[in-house]
Image 1 (cartoon, rainbow, N blue to C red):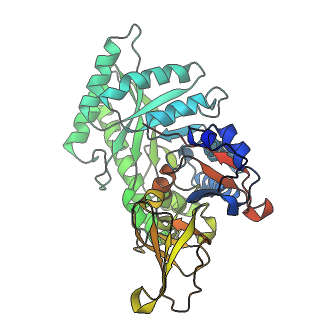
Image 2 (cartoon, helix red, strand yellow; image 1 turned 135 degrees about the vertical axis):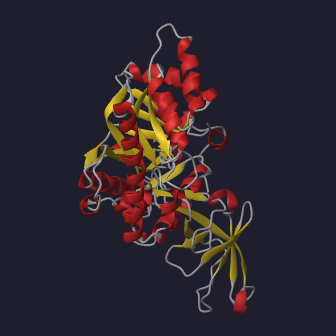
Image 3 (cartoon, helix red, strand yellow; image 1 turned 135 degrees about the horizontal axis):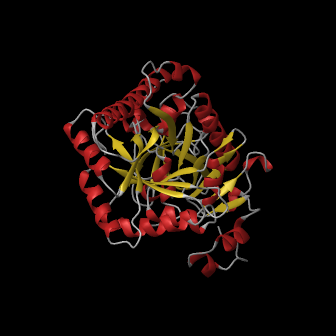
Length: 431
């Protein structure tokens, strides 16, 4: 609970980071109101360093996706680690992009390259243009994703009204078969899009971007490596076809050379290594860039891929047992209720079929309503949970879990055994 000496009103009215730090830094985890999202900064940083190392071993640059944590503190750890450094990020929302600027990460050159990670929408162009001005003032650049010719046309229309028209740097979003977004490199639609891009005065083709969302079904390194190879093949095919069009064309086209071949998801990025790089038998029509987002926090879904172990997951949710039901479960097992439900965990279930697993105890978050969840156990000998006890639960999908919380309590495994709050991170909210 919030100590009585603190001012509740200050914590209820969009509290600042300083107010939150004053209230909670130095407090034990046992004193926190639940549900509470906990992030281990040490593990978070180690995961970031590991990804830099993998990109280097795979002989690729790295672009960090900020969508999971949405914080300036997490961004710095993603970009600067003991294993490397990058200045390139991906954002999912305009709020993320502007908060990167407002946090001073552009002014101090921590971030120099922002990719807006959705196919560009008509109602975002003016905002993106203003963002570009902000980055350009510090030597930075904004890049866009495109996957439809009309996106190029409304960029042209926007630039035609500017006093000094510019060329936007664009990735073509490639659909490698996942059907989330993008255009297939073997389709007529791809060639039509490339034709519009190459003839446009408003864009500069920077590269090709793929994301194997289906790689989350991986259960081994070999499966994730196969998905990674498929990602590379898709963007490389797109680059090869585009070079063929340019070669056969009489147009004076503007492109970036070599093309950037950007691939990755957390499972396929974990599979990147010197060994998997050697498996790429085809000649590359560009330079590889690896991207990923979930990897600093991780979750049960990522654990199920077999590419990470439980010890690397840096986030969990603390919940309080608020009721107990002896013998109510299957085969006479007990059940318990906790004060964390769908709002605290989302309703994502992974391959295990549950919403979360209690750390260190044989209890599973099996059923959830909006603000409470039900813990069950298949072990008839499981130690009963006492009312008022707190449990730590790892959920299925860190990105959606993190989105529910107005702030994260930061611990550090090297500070008092990770049982004390050492910082507060306030995530960026909104679109």
